[in-house]
Length: 243
Image (cartoon, rainbow, N blue to C red; front, top):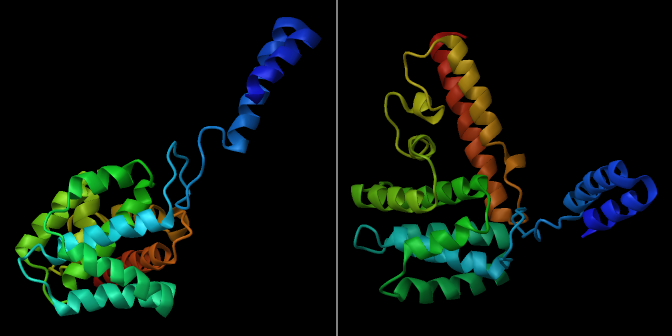
């Protein structure tokens, strides 16, 4: 690697101090060149590459798990997945993806844990948050997120190593209650105005689309929608309190 070559060169030129300086400079160059690991299409350095096709297959498998969570396959949920891919990838590619999806959904046993372990090794946390947001969208497509679907989504979130606060925040974006806006910002209704502002800044930073480093248009669009929901939650609290 560059750092060892630079250290050796520095030693010959300036003895031990030169070796130290050369090693540090070489390490910096190594980090810029990505020697820590190849970057995947999801923007994460990883020892193992994942192709868009692999990602889509695993995403479709998670979709099928959520759709079948309540014991029935809803046409509206199927249509939601189809429209999502149509709007993102165009008709030709979306139809090819959905043909695969029809095969996936017929399978009896799909291991959510195995799929999530695969994704954990190859995607950033922000991307996994967006995956969970997308899966909630599927569950809500028929107008109701059932208890069975919530339990399955919570199980998937745990496998994806999504924290409980983040899970409740995303859940609140789809299941409304009296304190929905506060749940989205991960605070209680008794929070002070200053705490509300700090929470909004924190959540806006966490969910900003720029943090979802990916070339996948579906993930980008979902990240933008989630960011807008955080903004709306803050605006709702502002109106409520007159901030």
